Length: 328
Image 1 (cartoon, one colour):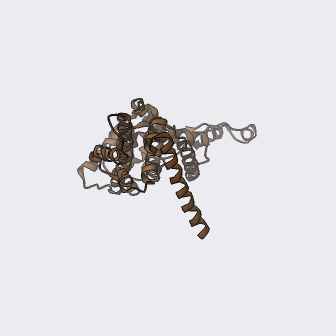
Image 2 (image 1 turned 45 degrees about the vertical axis):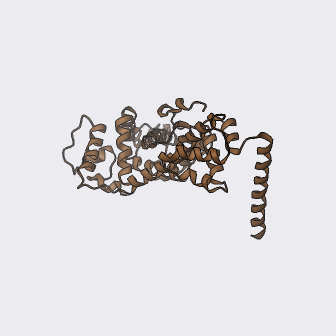
Image 3 (image 1 turned 90 degrees about the vertical axis):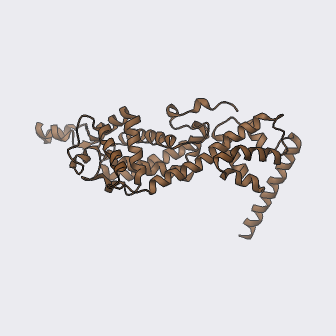
């Protein structure tokens, strides 16, 4: 233990000495080198975040936690601290501002998502009820809901006749995500819902065919459904997206697609992508039944995490504002 502590402080001191030497040789501080040498996006923003958090200066350490409205003044203070003339180095201020907007925005997004997750669904709240009924209309536009408490809810993947009990784990966040998917990516949502309800053709071997009648064969070849509950899986994928966000894994994606502060819409768009990709992954995995859901989900989770390790990764660029990531 003592050796590890000594090694830590040795490396820390060595790193600070190296930074001092590089600054003297290049005439630029670490923040300048990052902004000038690394393209905008996750690579740059994550290095800026690491540099600020690891600084021994209090102003730099706390800059990643300021309010969005205070970012401009914070940049001015950093420029003054580093003795950088903004008139001679205008690019640095603009680049730092873009990075801080993403860093602070990500922190704020976690708080906003957490607030929705902690708010339980309340059937006595007219706004909550309106959102739930809107979800039905989006997913089943040609099938009127006969009653608020109805077995019809099972048609879109809820477990019983009252969906409120299914939102306990993710609160309003689960409902918000499902409704966003159904409303703004409606074609894909409708297809995923339809597929989840359809039987999946299974080849019957010659050996099996010789032992059963034609009627039994007709039944047996469709005895294996794609088979999952759309809404329940949506709430489960909401949990997956939430954990990716809170763990910081989604920083790679958001820093690449959001030119400024990532918003709740960015999170919901990511949920839509994850729902679509999980649906395809489920079919590719060809599970025996719904009992294999946890295994498939865990494998899917690991695949997404691996993708997010690539600093250039943008999970759903077709949703993104990545075209706005100009070289600033």
